[in-house]
Image 1 (cartoon, rainbow, N blue to C red):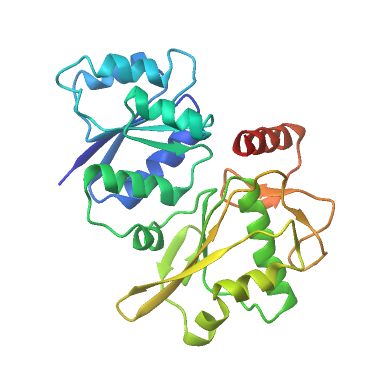
Image 2: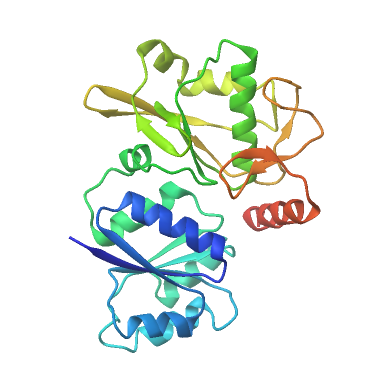
Length: 289
């Protein structure tokens, strides 16, 4: 069965990420995109999507104006709509729900939050955790690891680098037990018991404590599929201050005084431009309100 989706956002990079997540996580999904309200309504002349996502503030009309107009059209008035917004403190989210949005996902959005919202609104009987295991792509908020040796300094520092970058970029999920035999090809293979034991919540947090300031409270959970077991580590978004490096490790490329974030290419890397740093600080300010 084919499920039609419409993604509205004026930022091409965000549209691309949203399309990839939806198409890879929802079986039979076909996604059309628009950058403005008028583009969206031209698409709606010939299709009735199962679900729409829209950002809120953009040139060419806001997401709230789009929703108000959509609800006046009998053919489209029932379509569930997810607001994806950078202005998403509790009061703002409540105003979006009162305006008529069916779900609100803060921007920068976490992949799991988006998948969970879609499943709920479309009443899909899918496990979001397994959808993350099988997503098959990496995003700024979704990362794959085959396994890791937390008994070694380089292993602990490598995980700390990914955690620092991900929390600074709005949080996300690191999935352990998925190999990458070729660039961009991800194969779920599970983890042996010896690795599973090292990836308990308390052990993972202790492993990175020497490298991260302030501490980031990670949560680890196991996901079972057949005889394969995976570990998903949830990284919360930084609030109040960016996560910084406490201790140097050359093998992991981790150095005090440098700021790390997730790139649009889904890599953990040093922030190298003033515009990137400004964007991080603006996101941090919005999350801390």
